[in-house]
Length: 137
Image (cartoon, rainbow, N blue to C red; front, side, top):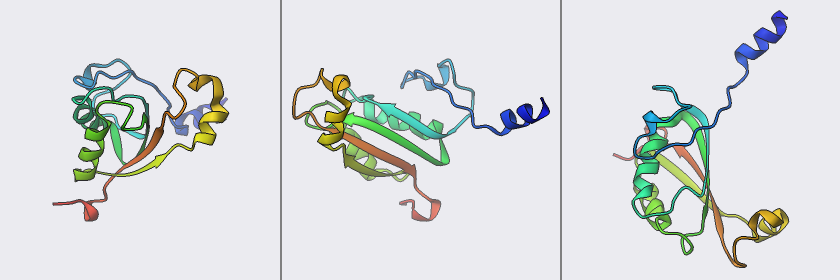
């Protein structure tokens, strides 16, 4: 009925898209100019060239008050993670909080992480846009 239509009109839209970092606008599932309040990404950095492309894509798609959550292998396990961290430290656009994913949580996840050797580390990145007042010049 009318209540259902009204509820659907205000319900947040959840979607997923596989993005080509070099051409994010060309990917299906995205609309020109659309930004998102939450961006989730996992294991997206594999090469030293990827971080700058990823951050440009994040700048394009993350809404001004949005939050990006990114899970990556620790920097000693993956090429490009050190470069990503350096770019985030120097960024006038983003601020980041990086936390190690506790080993106890990885153990609880069990089978999903059996493909990784013991001692493999993962980091959780909370990335937000800087407020204009705190943006670096």
